[in-house]
Image (tube, rainbow, N blue to C red):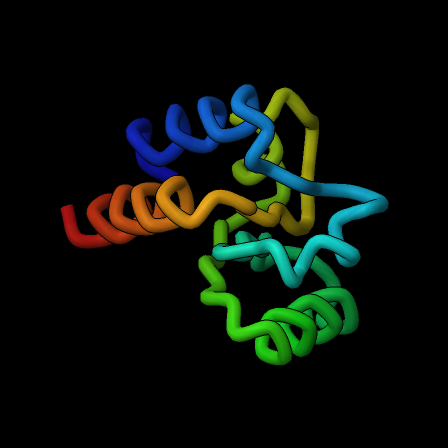
Length: 101
């Protein structure tokens, strides 16, 4: 994850637009972007991918759980949901920019 996306994820978290953990699955209808760690178990990935597909959410894959958790002050996270449309759009642009540079 590039530094711009890393910082943006932290900002969105402080603004209250990030969900992870227990209550996240209930918020899929209010979500705009799902971030998943590639090193999660296949069963967990399938569960989240199916939920995202059912709710028409774009998915971005982080390389590791640690990479996904670090900007949010966690050791490791498997999935993160962004609940702000503008925030999700901006974060996705930053994530995609990091892939091409």
